[in-house]
Picture 1 (cartoon, helix red, strand yellow):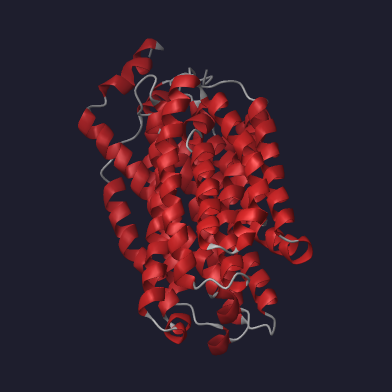
Picture 2 (cartoon, one colour):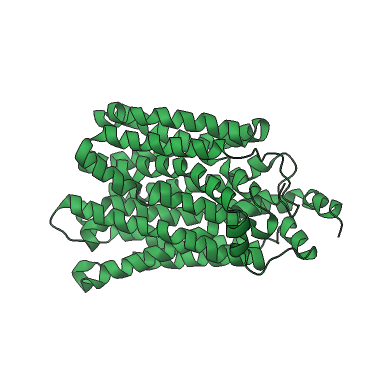
Amino acid sequence: MSMSTPAAMPARVDGTSRGRIIFASFIGTAIEFYDFYVYATAAALVIGPVFFPHSSPAAQALSAFVTFGIAFIARPIGAFLFGHFGDRIGRKATLVASLLMMGVSTTLIGVLPGYASIGGLAPVLLCVLRFGQGIGLGGEWGGAALLATENAPEGRRGWFGMFPQLGPSVGFLLSNGLFFGLALGLSDADFRSWGWRVPFIVSAVLVVLGLYVRLKISETPAFRAAIERHERVRMPVAVLLRQHWMPVLQGSLAMVVCYTLFYISTVFSLSYGVATLHFSRQSFLGLLCIAVVFMAIATPIAALASDRFGRKPVLVASSLAAILSGFTMLPLLGSGRIELVALFLIIELFLMGATFAPMGALLPELFPTNVRYSGAGVAYNLGGILGASIAPYIAQLLANRGGLSWVGGYVSVAAVISLLGVLSMRETRDASLMTQAGK
């Protein structure tokens, strides 16, 4: 097949098919991140006392944050595993499998007995299921981004790649909204006894919806073209690490600020707001629900800007703003005043949306078709280890020892790391996803 034929293929995807594909890429990430955030919220509120009954509340919080970080260790493993099959057998089947893995793990956490019922086996099983969540999410994002970008028309990959990036905002709203409703409707005893399990069990219903949508879509044009040109490789991960390790590193560094902004703003700030600032659970969850709307607003704005001006200018500007935002933590969050705390959360989550949106197009653009699922997924999830896996834990330690100004410094340092990663990249806005070289 000539190179001109595949290049024309995206234009043959009609509007109805594109709408279905966009929805499939969005709904999957929304469900997967709903599952992931359900655990993050529970870790900040109740996982410690239920599964780690230490005498000290601080020790309980640290233990809960350790289990939170386990999934981020698992995510690159999931990216390697599902990336292999995504580059070998296709995007569609692999996305179905990753969604199943995440849904089953999350639902089982919802019915897992606590330490009071089964003793030390409870935290062990919790860690295993949290690891399963990480494996599932590790395989999700890369495939969802490719589903959108490999079907995007010329010059609109940033916009199409934005829809998987909207999934986290919606997933977070669903998760926190449900926890918020439970906090309002249940007594503290009922919430700690069984109420916190409801959002985990609801995941089973959402996964059925996601599977129905994903089973209706077809394979992407870029992958079909790679099959016809016999470009698939036997071991995509080996080729990726041997020939494309630099884009993996660059993409991982670029992702650090996204993760740090989000998990410091949500997991750490929620725990700090309730335990130290003495906000009620429902009050702080309500503030987070408001703030994440601004994250959702920033996402399409940054995506459109990345199509018009390029990925790098948008990411450089938002990373510089994130560096400055670290200095707002002490005067805003530390004030304990509801309006200033809300402003802090809005700033951080708006910047998270601005840094996160271009990644849906940028990371796939860094890699050729035959390793694109692996490359985009691995870069995305390695960034999670650096920016999120230990972020709440480190933030808790820094807050205990040096106060919120140290935590703000941590945010600024993470933004500097991402800025360096972005500056080292080539601009990818005009790259072709239909060619073997990905250029």
